[in-house]
Image (cartoon, rainbow, N blue to C red):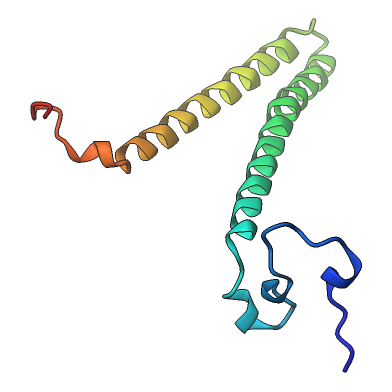
Length: 124
């Protein structure tokens, strides 16, 4: 059977052994992946998270403002509801990001080696 490996077609990645790259359906090779895959996965996950937050920050106020515009048209009012809903979405998105960041930083700080010391204990 002829196996077509990516490493035979593309340039190899420095530090990545082509024999440890997982192939679909090959569970034994998945366990042998290298650290390069983990670092790249964390990098790609960070890009994906940033992109999703950017879309959330851009689209949520636009959707709320659009809905407010529709309500304003139905009621025959000036863009009071549109502006109010837009500002509500901006402030809500900001608060969500702020408290999410704060909770994530508290979790990271509490898992560090410096968190073993109690605040009342004197420093060595």
